[in-house]
Image 1 (cartoon, rainbow, N blue to C red):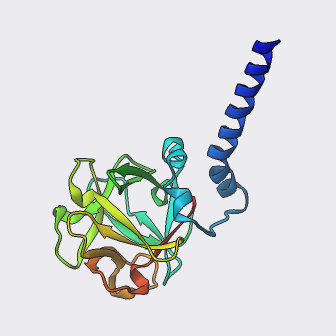
Image 2: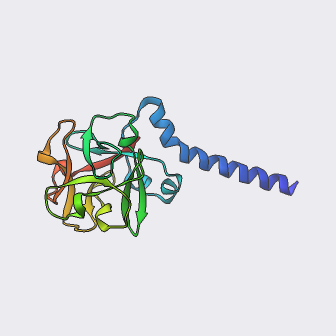
Image 3: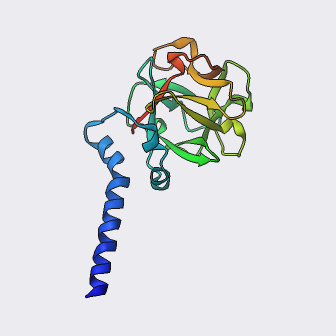
Length: 188
């Protein structure tokens, strides 16, 4: 009897964990819910362990970060919301920083040539452990945030020219509390 009760409790706990882990993916599959997610939810240990992808949306344009191809050094651009795997990102904790690994290909978002210069394009590159592939998620209000590059934390990810056009490139610029440097996580 005791073993049966323990097994039932363990089964219930595992089932509950699976529901929590699968729910963001299920939400994407259903109505394409792309409401901003609280940062604490996305960066929680259970989220990282579940390896559930998220989308990263620019506040000014309401468009999403997307790798332009699966190639090494492919540019990261903003695009309209889609189900392309290149628009999904897995966040990996790296000593308090987030490595954004592209869901469509095992490459990390970094800066072209690992540069820290302003106006350097964001690209997806082979994982190397380089600090340009790590980003500080700097919360504004618990939902919106800036992505500060670990290699030079005075540089934030933004959209070139504050453009709202699909295809505009993502690059690093001096952090300016600008709306084109403001991001949110959404269900992918």
